Every structure is written in structure tokens, then in C-alpha cells.
Image (tube, rainbow, N blue to C red; front, side, top):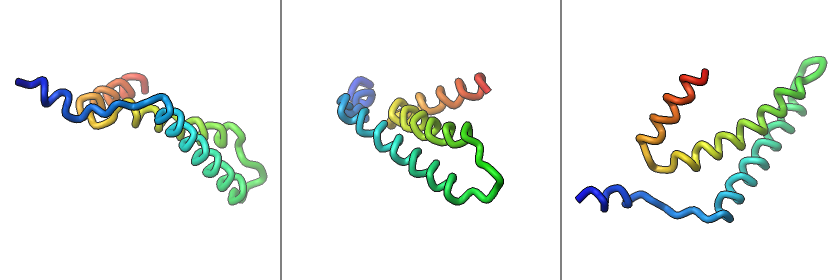
Length: 85
């Protein structure tokens, strides 16, 4: 009875979709870091912060792909991240 509900929101993702998502996240992270570098008004910007902007965009894309439409998986990841923190 519940099998049709479990498979209702399952969308198959190909490796091309995953690669495209990661590439878009990388480009957005690089664009964000370049904007930060150009608009920063201090003596020198932190290169580690710039690197973390790029990495956080890629990690966010991976987390969003893992969660998908599953609310239980979303709450599970929130719980795991709160334990790690």
C-alpha cells in the first residue's frame, strides 16, 4: 500500500545532471568570490574566506542534491549537522 507513495517523488538523476549542478555551483561560487574581491574595502581580503565561499557553494549544491524532495532526509541532515557543530 505504501510502496506507491515511497516511489512517488523519486527522480532519477544522471551523472550529467550531477556534473552540471556542480559546475553551475562552481561558477556561482567563483563569481561570488570575484565580486567580494572587487568590492572589499579593507587593506587586504582574506584568501581563505574567498576559498570558503567557493567551497560552500559546491557543498550546498551537494546537500541540495542529496536532500531532493525528501523531508525526512532534510531533517536527518539538519540533525547530523547540529551534532557536528
